[in-house]
Image 1 (cartoon, rainbow, N blue to C red):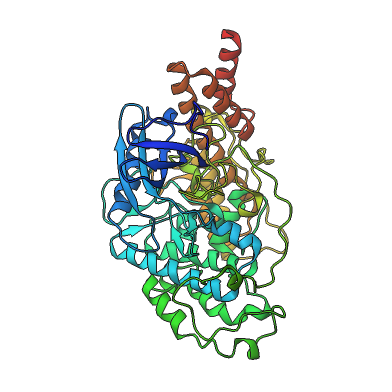
Image 2 (spheres, helix red, strand yellow):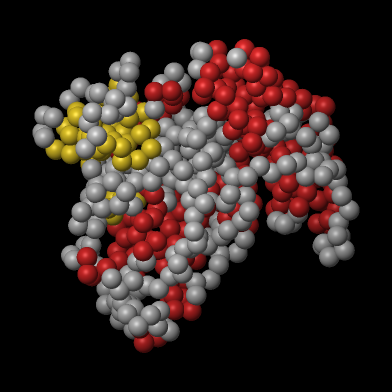
Length: 510
């Protein structure tokens, strides 16, 4: 126990014992609810964020959303508290670790299907209540002591039909490695977006790896939007129809609902898996049905599907939660402070093995700065947009499609250049550079200039968001946090004049 640690929050009615996990928006503690003498996971909003009404509203909204839900595979909220010092959620303590840890160890095929079915059932229930999760990933699936999966972290969930929005129009929130195409592009999402993310998760449970990889988050988001659905390796090809129906690029081609997915899983004949498919290993589990409960003994989990041993992980400390193509409209509401959130989201709700805010490279590409490509504008901040040179239209390589498609691409590039020079990067709708470059990618998904320009637009807008947050911190006298945030912004864009100006002012004052 660590109850004498002065850094542990003192919250009436609870005795905090230790840290379970830490993310950009909150820290999760193991605590004792004194009135009932039971252990709970106490999710406490980071105090530095309490000055921001949007952060507070979003944090408390998570608790209210979960409190409406009653399902064995969805985390239970016991209490919600808000005071001048702390905002907190008291939730079920889940000691069984995360799905990420289970995937690393290797999952039995039968157990993978059990997890998929449980999560689909939980999502179906949430969707019927009008709630879209929007951040399905291994770190947000925790386990009870008996091995049942529990869906957690509804921090960026959306209530369908709710007019109150906690993120800006066109803003991407979520984890880029698991985003649906529509989510990565900042479009409206519904329950089928969660099903896409669940498909990515199922792929990872089966193979031990993500279906797509890329050098940076923007390229990864583009792969989700444009690249063909990958094929499962031979021993697992029987489940390709499930993957195809979950990861279809167009929502209308996916399962209509999570309940349809559950019925589809139940309809698959599992008896002849071992006979009709190459052996995954000498101890491949041959299914007769999808189990209705978690395996009762730990020994039941030892016959794991053979998966590649993960490569050594390189920790990434400074990152953004919403790095996707639609970061062009600004980083997500989580973004704002050095070392807070990563593209894979915040800390898990309640696991003793919960990872900290840093996430591993296997869940997202590296976050090293991408310098402006030749022929694209230099990001000097939003106030300099009208003087920044627009990306130049370049001659098409010899192997590019000729005729009308190329004419359309050239026209869109000229239009995007004019919009850029006029400062219309993301606004107004229907007449901005982002939309023009996006249309280029619809015609040619690998067009290098359009891809680089979208990255550059994202950096300009992200730099603007960082500057505003850092400036607000300085005005409140929070010097150390402001400096850390400025350093984060300059890692993304070393040439941003406004951030450099703040840094010079700090250096001069000290």
